[in-house]
Image (cartoon, rainbow, N blue to C red):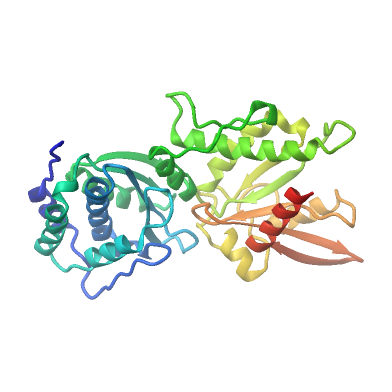
Length: 366
């Protein structure tokens, strides 16, 4: 059995440096912990410790993930989502542990709580813990996520810091690290993706290949139904509002991967509202678009977003709709929307999750 070092003296010093805010009660919900960023340093340090221990003593060193994000919340907020070993949501019994630990008042009690977990499960500990960490584009995310890294390191875990990533990417990296993989998509179907990637490929790159390869394979099933060979002169274009968040650089990466397949109908993705072009989630992003039933503000480029939609309308027939999409701040949510013109009347249309699922089902059925 491998003996894992837990530096509890150093941990106590850090716990005293980052104490729990007085009078604050924190709850772990569906979205994890989420509140004003200045209330979270103690939470990140403690969750780094807890996740490292859970990995070590409960799942034989399998990877567990920590994502630093507040999704569609305002920029001043932040949060922490923990990804279980299957890349999914944290199991309920661990949520309870996380909530208790986050709300302990002093450093000595935190050390005692963690020590009890170690002692209770000492016979099951056979490997070092493994913690994957990622964070979104908020200004305070690097600082907070580093506290989680420090906590996990103090508890003897191996830490893989993915840096700036979307929430789905972090979940995928955990899923992949624990031996799960998506079946290889045959090259005959346009597939780029394979779980047997080269050793130099990162979890992030494999995730992007799987997304693109799956899309191309699905597209190929439609192309084969066309009698004219399905070679297109002008590929479809989707303008993607990235909420001034982390989704933008990955939309660009996906677009680059699809470039060679334009003549097979692969979509061209045009990312707008990138990091730093506006305030995160303010007057843009999936949450704004869905709740307000309005197009997002376009913070950079030649046109304000409604003007961009107007321009696209002139390039389509009255019966057609133009294609736009909005992500939220950590790119784990998407809605599509459009501006339709009929009989000189314009209307805003929204395609949310339920409608997207119905359209995908229709595509597969056809």
